[in-house]
Length: 94
Image (tube, rainbow, N blue to C red; front, side, top):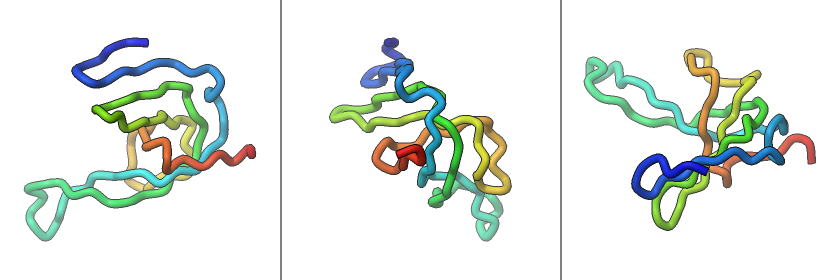
């Protein structure tokens, strides 16, 4: 377990590693109508496998899980992994 910053802790949870999931997550995109001057958030869908990394952030904590091996993601999503809030992650192997 590591204390990353004030009110942030990450750790590896082997029991989650490799589990297939679907998730609703956030994505950031530039608002073309406003010349890309700021970013706005949207809801996006992801499917992949949990990496096993967890993050607690804030007090009370938001609990995040990292998803990798993404097989379903927004067409312009370039990252290899995504963090999604635990309550929006649905296990496909149950």
